[in-house]
Image 1 (cartoon, one colour):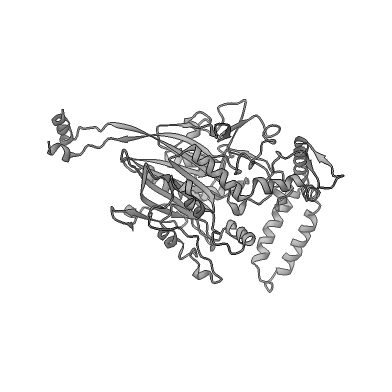
Image 2: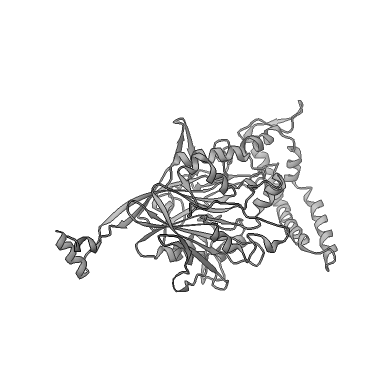
Length: 527
């Protein structure tokens, strides 16, 4: 029997047996600590009072939500939401201008006028009305507090027991790595001899760890599967809140893996082109399955947010933009140490999808691409500069990478992005709204109920884990949830909540991957 197999190997007719490996992935935008204090609305503390005064008026949860919805509609109809957008843009311009610059005084006057006009907004009136609401203050204290959210995130992840974790908006990498329970099972450090430290920022930006010319070398030298957004808002807001705390970090994307079954063999980053001081990168990690020697490529990223067509164009531009300058670097393990190795043949990447496709086409490997796309599958197609026809993020990823969506494999969506179950057309991974306490009045009442968290793979099939059981009592929901409409049930179950510590639901999926059984020629020559 052995001699027959040897003969097939020698004459090239041997076909190795396929072996299935099931990998459980947890994909989750966990809502950065630095970005959490933004007036997210929850109705679980009701009735909702305008203030703590004994004479204060109260509202049932559904009446309160109706009030928020009507204020949003009124501002949209009056053009007030457009004025908010204009104000935001002009404030950004004014901040960058020197006081001596031409047009500064005119712009300053325009900003002052817009502020005066937007103060008449129904949403601003609502904000002022509930400024001292005890129930809304309780949301900040009981739901959005990071210490509570971290404990809850950790509890859900450990109970879900994934093999691989892809996080977005993580700004506490160090905390996860030093936590006794979490670090007993998981790590994101490819070199265990290294200790992760947040970047150092100084008054002289040229000396910063993540300045544009140092960004790549710093993230490679950190030996962490973490792609931070330099000079991030998460870092800025936490610095204002927490002063000079030593653990303040940028938010970014990270990959953790279960140490007992997987080991890292390659870590790479594709830097997103930028004409500002800020840098960010797509993260790619290749893991080896210890039992079967199968290699698994895991790629993760976080696309720009926004529901306007111009924001979809921004997302499409980072997926595929041949005219931009893309750079990618990686380190590989050579049995003794980690060393930088150029990509084969100076691989010509022209965007995120070409980078993902590079891994998807690797021989004898399997690939998973998990991301917060900030784009729903049904986003109206639009003509991008690099495309000959109208498209959207969903269609571009499917077309350019050759991977399949777990939502299609598990029969939640058609390949067109349309829902399978027409009775409940809202297939969602986020259900959130900012309330009167938000510092962004234009976003108050904007109900985001959609599917923007995605996993694509060349695995043969996938099965969604629909909930995570905690303490054999509580079931924590996972994506996707299905709703009939935005009103009613969806409005009364917004996230974050005391049950769900993020504005995104975690995606937990079992992916079946096929690997080949490798037969050593040396084995037969020694028979």
